[in-house]
Image (tube, rainbow, N blue to C red; front, side, top):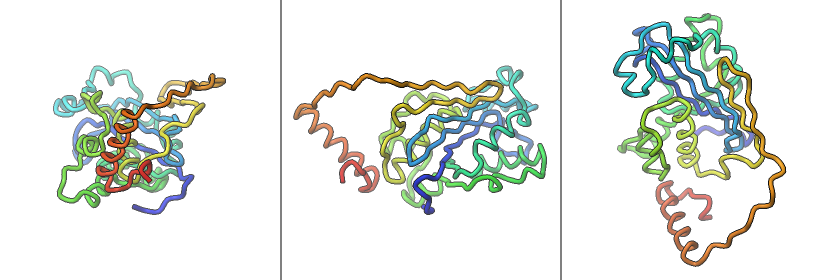
Length: 242
């Protein structure tokens, strides 16, 4: 895993598309991103549905459920490009099977304006699939398989969706690269940056003191068993067991 600074801004990213290959004219129809700093989700997100100006293939609709009718009134890529670029600028992108998503994003940049450059113009990239294949050689390393391996609940994921998959991948990334401290810091504003909308902030302040409920011996034992399971799944890298 490449060395990164403690305060480096990470953007966990996923896309949905009209088909499998930009070389065949396929386009991006959804981008979902969540931000992490110090291995914590900040609550800041970028999410946009995009009119691809072409039909979505039926095989793709079966995967993500995004129909041509749904996309008719959505903005084209040029309308969200600047906002998207500013969101990823200077960050490290965390992507599962990065060549797929990066290839599509670069294709959109090139169609819009070749002078925009490529993803590497604005960000570095960490491919969680490539990392998983090195960490778990010879095993299935799909996002669903990694969720099962690291005991991450993705039961609410019936269809693929860019923002949902980015949130799940954030959990997988944290577990696969050594656990986490806290996903979301207390009193962190949750900012959703969505094409066509103004930023919406929901900030919780002046919270009352939390009631402390002590666990009993049975719960302590179950907790120890859970940590042992996480430690085994992460190859001895469960920080809570240290």
